[in-house]
Image (tube, rainbow, N blue to C red):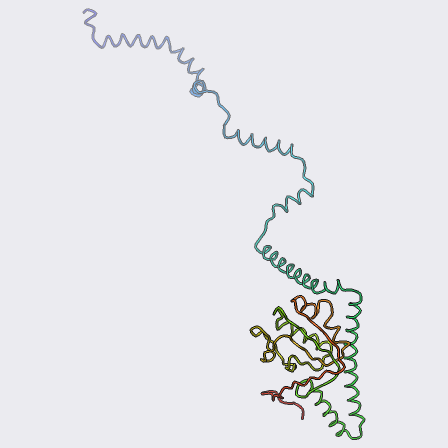
Length: 315
């Protein structure tokens, strides 16, 4: 049988013998390699060397930067920490409301102080003679009130000590009626006083200015007042009416003439005090004259009006 006629089995055996022999020849090398290089070692050899994680680098660098900044930053003093705590301010709604209320209160106080200073500015700039005159006027008013008080006490004493108390009571009643008639304007009156004339050439005098003059005269002790033929009483009112002024609904024309019964030494200074009636009217370009007289007649009368609802409570 020739070489070419070898059976596949024989050939296989032959090859197998070579493989086995080859295996036997190289088996030791393979075992040595396997012992020297484990899969883990081969994997480490094939992979690159491990690099530090990039995620950990920023944190480490930030920590290092913060530590360096803390080391470089100087320690804060107590005042600096207080300023840092107060500024910038942290305003709450309640604090804002309280601040607005305090602002409104302060503004109101400032306005009141300013108004009081304006009213007192005339007295601050007054001359010494004017101040002395004002003090004398106040003393006179105080004296009048004391006299009225003393007169009432005397009347009470007379009623208590009189033998005929009924007759004394009638006499005092008649005297009181006469006094009340003068105040109510139901009877004429005469006596010392002044005449006040206001010549309003520019037409700038208004009703409230005349009312201020009446109030000042009453405060100075005026007992009877008449303005251009109209009797002034407790319920008198003044109002602007077209080009003139009306008193209790009666229109009066310029010039305005006041007849006043009272003590002239009290009435005239009351009108001429600094910042008073005369100066106010002169600022409105009005010409004001005040004349004293020993006898002033107030003859304008008012009808006695019966009250609709009020009744005497005396028995």
